[in-house]
Length: 407
View (cartoon, helix red, strand yellow):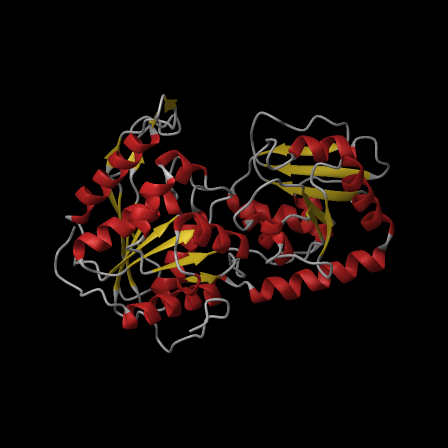
């Protein structure tokens, strides 16, 4: 099976018990955290996969004014409900102290939480899947190796910073036992092969997907009226943290003073936009994001680093032409047919791209149509089927001998 074009297998993983280990998953106090993981779990459940989720929660998180229940259940209409287990763990940041990085303590605590959580599984794991290389992916690999079952990891990070903090040689030793990896970009596949030593034929490139039942084009005027936005402005949308990596301030400065242009910024952070043509800047409930995207004319994100940007996929699904970075991490998502690609540090280039879309209706429509077509290829359910097929293929061909040990 080629990793670059995964062949779908009939009824992959149906009835199998897949344990998903993740450091991000939605909670009442942080409902947007890890939504992309939950959407994958939902899609797998509908396919008939028995999923359990282990989501260690830091006792020191300032977001957790009240800790969520240790065990909850989600019903997505599959054969079984999803049990979500949230062991409490300590975190120790990632500070370098002489030759030691404290992230190694954080990882040890995370892995201990996963081990404790396994006792609450309703049946033994048949395979482990960790979302992000560190800490969840490495924990899944370690648990799978201990239990004698296959293990998989998702490489979706924008950088391998946590791998570096843990120690590349230690990480390579752990990842010698991985069954296969799902990378959400060709760049991440290359990094996993180069830095972790995973064979290229064990790494599938499967870009992030979008839930087409939530992200689709609404009527633009109707959405502007609903959200009290001007009907006669060319509106640019930005979605992401207000920080240097995502580029909120660069967009702010690039758009400042542009005639008949307004901007909506969906996110939060220290670099909040301040230009006079800012129409809105702040966080909104997740279900309002597709409505506000539909109210816009274009999407702008001059990001400096990504794994595979969910915000770009969601904007394309809402029918927006995209202005984003010309860097390698975007190559699997956008091209000249769907977007105007710019140097993310060049505010003049950002400004010129916005002006081009504002002034050229035909260009704007052509890119929007191509974005919609590309988003249709990135449906979350199709991605879940491909991931399940990739896992099933390696499960069938794995030399790991399944056991009834639980790690």
